[in-house]
Amino acid sequence: MTGHGDADGKADGSLPVLSELADSGIKVASVEELEECVKVLGLDDELMKLADSTNFGTRESVDDWGRTLKASPELIVLHETVISEPATVNLFQTPHPRDEDQVSYHMLIATDGARLRIVPDQNRAYGSGMSAFGDATQRRQPGRVGSINNVALHVSLVTPADGRGNTDAHSGYTNSQYRSLAAQVLLWQAKYGIPLTRVTTHAAVDRSRTRYDPRSFRWDRFDPHYKEFAGLCGFERFDNEQAGL
Image 1 (cartoon, rainbow, N blue to C red):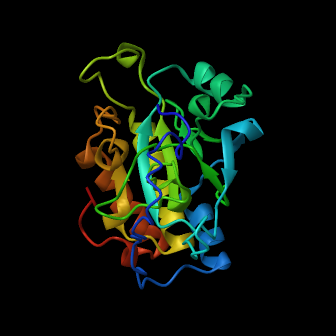
Image 2: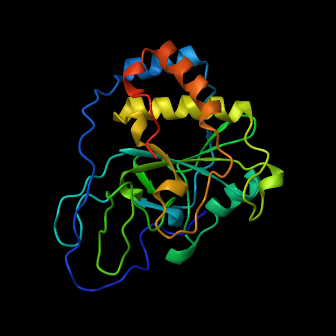
């Protein structure tokens, strides 16, 4: 995990480059289409495990220099918890007044496939600290590092027991987790017009060179579920045949 996504950068007084993603050009799904997709996939309701208000923030639309910022989801970032599900929920629900202690994801995927809602989509979760997608990042204030949190949706897989430590890999995630993750990714793509090339991992976007998760993620276990669900929902347009790493 990582701390607050926007703190502890250099304050050199210079105006940082505003580097943002271009519009994807993909048509978002209607509310009716999304509701039908949820029904077709037979998804259980999200379990509400909301984080304490200190552990998430507002998606900011203007930076300290008065420039307009993109403030709606454009990326989906995959993580793992490293610790157990109860410990993770407890961490998020514990108040953290200090920036460096604040952390959250929008959603957890439990080992049985349950989807645990931690932060509402419209809010900024603190999932990736010093981060960028390619060159795209936002530095909103002097003295703060660039981060993608303002335009990201963060989803984390609960780590198996043998992966709760600083190991290079572990036994992997359950089939139920891959299925629920594929469904959630597809729903987010459809709701916000996010192509598959903008579904990535914490390891790929991290610029602190300290994050490697999800360590044992297998795209070949994710893809079959994703393609099946995209076909069932008629959302094939969001699958541009590659993972944006």
